[in-house]
Image: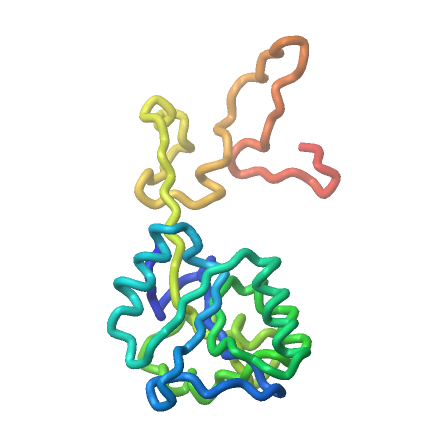
Length: 207
């Protein structure tokens, strides 16, 4: 389940402005032209319909939402910048999608915009990540969150570590193995073993 949320957590998609240096069109309500929203997210057909018909339905300007795979996404942005004619107004993606464009100076500093969103209570970790290694700039705003659901067979619950809360499992608690006798051999090969709870493997990978 994914939803538009400015108070998004880690593993979120992000919004960035595009792109200084060229001569972009001036889209929006004032000029009558659409805001071109180019994104690596919301690509499945049902998600596109949700974006256009629900999330962007009451936008203050006409928005042309264009989802795309990472390859064509990068190609279009690079081509428009090189041609000096940028038609994309806004880009949405993951943190890693923006790195090449930040390094090339092709994404606008959103610091002034972010200051207007101070009441959105962005997590400090995301704000720091949005700086992309700079001190005073922000290159994106969090805009949606991915929620992951874990389904577990009830028969496995008795094998959880002692004291583990099934409603608040950490990754370390969910993956560690309580101390048990040596694993049996199966089909002539040893069953791979992970460290028991409370222990970690050495740098060489040996327990």
